[in-house]
Structures are given as structure tokens and as C-alpha cells.
Image (tube, rainbow, N blue to C red; front, side, top):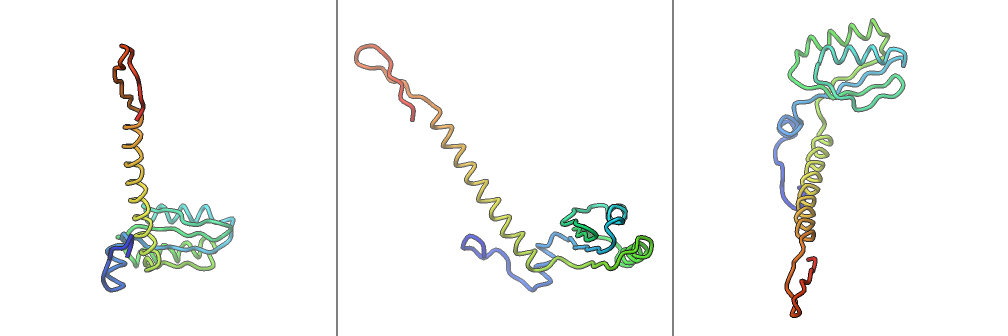
Length: 143
């Protein structure tokens, strides 16, 4: 539910597939000195990558599907050996992330509606109404 309306309905897998955007979360943990090289390997393999977190040797990315799962794990294992990574995790979008993205979309929708309303009010208030007075002078009144 969002803004009092039922927005999504289905099994957990259906919700992840339909509203998760076809994206996966990749987490890497290793030495801080190897973080840049690890991030470059992730970008070169997955292409469409968004950095979610990066501090010290820990990095979290959002990567777009589709990709060959076997080739992804081969690449991650090679990076683990070459860069001395402690661990990596590749997982599907969680239901929490799906619900947060739906709620965030509702917030953006509401802000857009408010901005449109505010813009309409401002355009009316910036107009001046000029009416003739009884003595021949014009009287201006802003709405």
C-alpha cells in the first residue's frame, strides 16, 4: 500500500522480478588498496553499475541484468585471487529494497504534484488585475 492504495500484489519472486528493476546487488570485501581495481573490474564486466556504498575495503554495487551467471562468478573468483578479496556476494534485489523503491516513487510522484500545484498558484498570483476607478485612474490589485 502507498498513499492509501494497493500498489503491488504477488509472490515474493514476482515482486522482485517485476518491481526490482532486473537489478542485482554485488558486495565486495577486501583490502582498501585494491578497492579501485576491484571497482574497475566490476564496471568492465557488468557495464551498467551504480555504486551504493564504498568505504575502506567494502564496496556495494547495483548491477543490471541480464548477464551470464557462470561468467560473473568466474570473473569474481578471478578478481578474488588477483586482488586478494576476502569475499563477494551477488544477490537478487530484496523485498525490502522493492518496497523502498515503490515508496520512493510515491514520494517523487507527490512532490511532482505539489510542484505542479505550486507552479499554477504562482502563475495566478503574478498576474495583476487593472480596473478603472471612478476618477479616471487605474487601480491595480494582485490576486
